[in-house]
Image 1: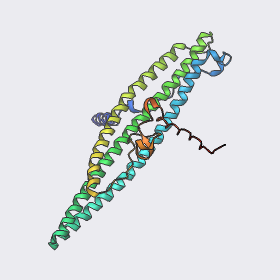
Image 2: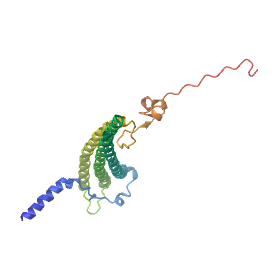
Image 3: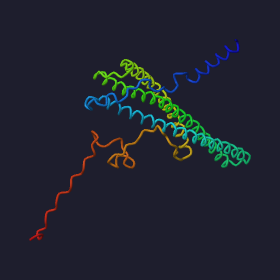
Image 4: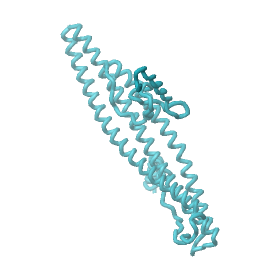
Length: 280
C-alpha cells in the first residue's frame, strides 16, 4: 500500500510539472449539425452560417501558420546552439593563445591576446543570450499553437451553432437535436479560447525581454569585434516599403505620406515659349 501511495504521489507531481491536463490539446467538437437539413433554406437566410464558416476557415489557416512558425523556430534554436559551441571553442583557443603570449613577455602580443580574449568571451555571452532568446521565442510559439487550436474549435462551434440556429428558426428538428447543447458547446469553447490569450501574451512578453537582453550583449560584442552580426531576429519589427527612397534605407519607411497617402508629386515644368522664328 505504501508503494502504491508513493507511486501515486510521484505521478501527481509529474503531471503537475508537465502542465497537467489543462495543457493537453483540445478535443474535437462533440456536437455537429448536418448541412443537409438546412440545404433548402435560402442563402440570404444563412448569412450567419456563411460568415462563421469563413471565420472557421481563417482559424484553420492561422493554426497551420502557427505550426509552421513553431517548426522553423526549432531549427533556429538548433542552429544557434551549434553556433554557441563554436564561440566556446573560440574562447578556449583565445585563452590558450593568451597563456602563450604571457610566457613570451612580448607586450604587443599580450595586448593583442587580451583583446582577443575579451572579444571571444563577449561573443560567447552573446551566443548564450541568443539561445535563451530563441528558446523563449519557441516557447511562445508553442503556446500560440495551442491558442490557435482552441480558437479553431471555437470558430467551428460558432459555425455549428449558426446552423442549429437556422434549423430552429425553420422548425427543423432532426432526431436527437437539442439546440441548447450547441449553445453550451459554443460558450465552453469561447471560454477556453479567451483563457489562452493571456497565456500567449505572457510568453510573448518573456520572449521580448529575452530579445532585449540578447540585443544589448550582442551590440557590445559587435562594437568590440568591429563587425555587425547577421543573425536572424524573428521578433524584429517588420519594415514597410515606402514610396520615397530618401525617407529610409533602400526605400523602407514607417509608412507613406500623411494619412497613408504617397508623397506629393513635383509639378511638371511650364512649357517653353516658342522662339520668334518657330512655326512662322
